[in-house]
Image 1: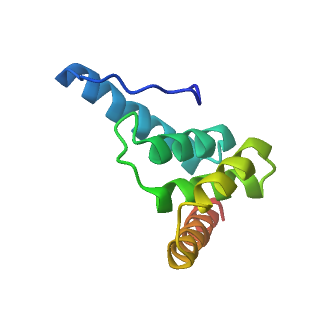
Image 2: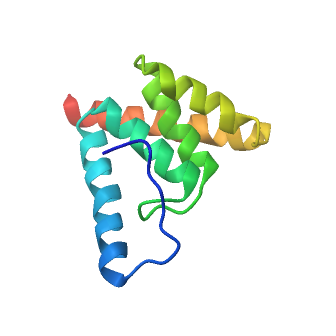
Image 3: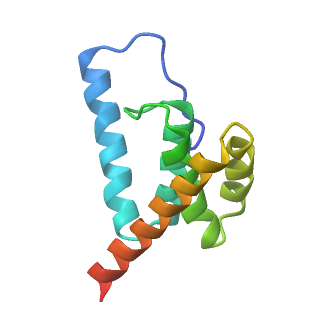
Amino acid sequence: MSAAWIKPAEFTPADETQCDMLVATCLAAAAQGDVSAYFDLGVAFSTGSHGATCDLIEAHKWFNLAAVVGYEDAAQCRADISEEMTAREIAEAQRRAREWISATSRKAA
């Protein structure tokens, strides 16, 4: 997936299904530890594209997960969206990231 997603002004039902599949594919890849999928999910949630609603808490979570494992662009994106978030929202995003790490660590064990 490319990080440079652009959401067309009008979707057909087939387009929406394809976008939902892209998010689902990224979620599956993220569950397997694919760092680029973390970043792509951050982009999707920060822009409201590819079947994801615009959700800065979820975007921050995914950018944070990518940044923690060394994805430098994710750290910058996380910083950029943090400027639009409250301290409470950032704390919630961090809590969700810890939950993701905990849940995926248990699966690997």
